[in-house]
Length: 428
Image 1 (cartoon, rainbow, N blue to C red):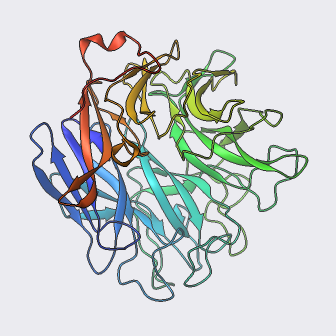
Image 2 (cartoon, rainbow, N blue to C red):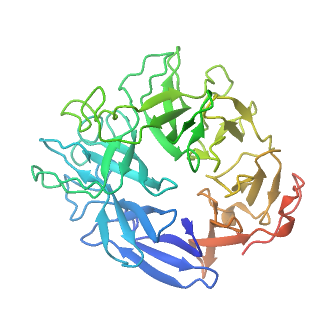
Image 3 (tube, helix red, strand yellow):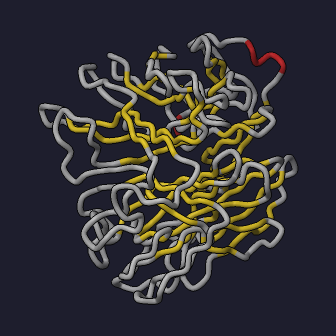
C-alpha cells in the first residue's frame, strides 16, 4: 500500500494470479473505496507508488493476452502510470524493445517496484533482462539472477520498431544505473545482483568533500567473499543530471550484453561487513533501503551477533556505519521514515512500532496481538504529514481470513519510549 494525502492505494486479488487485477483508492478517514485502474485482457497489476506532489500512481503491469511462451514473469512486466483525474487510463512508463534494432532509452526486460524521486522527475525500479540473464521461454526463474537497478527520466518519449510482437513504446527514457557481472570476483566490489533501492534524500546527500550530490540511489548489491560466500552489502549509484549520454557501452545493450549505465554514473560500495558473524544486509524480513529525508543517513536491517534483525544507519558520504537498535526481538517488516526524519515505522513483537532515529528506542503504537492477527511484514507507511501510519493485518470475517488496511494515529505523547516488555497503544 502507498499512502498519499488522505488516500490509501490497495490491490484487489484475482484468484490465484501472480499479481492483482485491480487497484482501488481508499479515502481516509471514512474508508470509501474508488476504483483507480483495472487490468484487461488477462493482464495483472501490482505494487503501486504515489507521485510526491501530483495525483498520479506508478505500478507494475503484466503482459496482456499472456501465452504459454509469454506469461507474467520477472523479465516480462513493465511500469505504467495512472492519473487519478482519469482513473482507468494507464500509459506506459518504459518502452520495451525485445529484438534488434535496439533503441537507447528502451529496455529489453521487466521493471518492478517503481518509485518516484522526490521531485517526481525520475522513477527508479529493479530490472530483469529478457535477453541476458533473463528467462527462458515460458519460465519464471532467472538463469543467472543478474537483477539491476534502472531509472526512467520524465518527458522523453521513446518509440521502438515493431520487430517483436511484445515491443511497445514508452513515455519516459529508461536506463540501467547499476553494473552487475555474471560471476563476481571473490573478495572484490563486483556484484552479481542489485536490488531493493532507495532515492537518497529530498535533494541528494553531502559528499565527504562538502559538495552536494543531487541525485543518487542506495541499493543492496550481492558480493562474493574470498571463501565463496555471498551476501548483500549497501552500495550507492551517483547519477548525472543527463541520463541520455552513453558511457563505456551502449545504453540499449546488445544481444549478448546488458544495457550499460550512462556516462557519469558512479557505483561504489558503502559497507564492508564480510568479517561480521552475520555479514551483510539481512535477507529476512525482505526490505528496501530507505533514506532519511535530509539524505544524511540510510537505514537497513542487519543481524546482531544473536541473529536478530536490527536497524543500522550508514552515512552515504563517508560510509560510517552504526547499529541503531538492540531490541530483544527482530524487526519484522519493511519500514519507512517519518517526514521529519525522527522516526522509523515498522513491525516489532507483533506490534506497529516507531523507533527514534537518534536514540534507537521505540514506542508501540498498537497492542501486541497473537501471530495470526499481527501486523503484516509489508511496509508501515507514514502519511505525508507524519500523523498517521498505514499498515496491513489479517482479519477473520465469518471464518474467512483477509489482509486488510489499517491505520494508527500518532498522539502528542509519541515522544516517549515503551518498556521493552510492556503493553501498547491504540490502533484502528
